[in-house]
Image 1 (cartoon, helix red, strand yellow):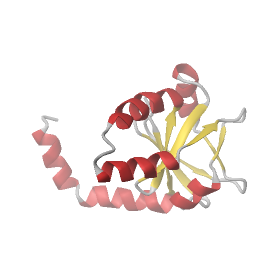
Image 2 (cartoon, one colour; image 1 turned 180 degrees about the horizontal axis):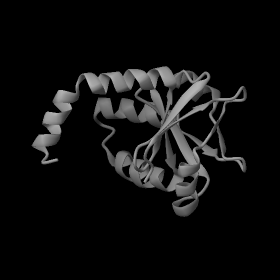
Image 3 (spheres, rainbow, N blue to C red; image 1 turned 90 degrees about the vertical axis):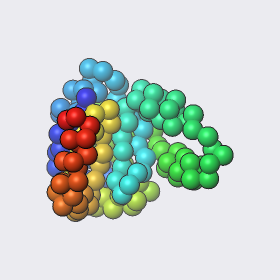
Length: 147
């Protein structure tokens, strides 16, 4: 499971270093292939096996007859790109995805269990502020779930 957050920089060629903890998980459980796509103002990077389980099987089984689902699937799948981590532990983020997530210099990689999110640092700070600002509501929701 991917967890934690790590701050890195993106180089002039569009490469980011994958944190060593994440590489350990990839080496133990997966391989060096990730599927990266855009989602909610950041990028999501799925190990190839998780992409097949979570996206291809679950999301791909949703009805395209519902307009909002069809639009989402078109958006989500059309940006998905297969990427490979190089021998130096770096991942080349394609320009179209860098543009979408506004990745210019400082980035934050966030472990989300079965996948990794990649944020521009300023966008990550906005997300944290939103969560902290609405924490009372989150607390109530968690309490209702018995947590």
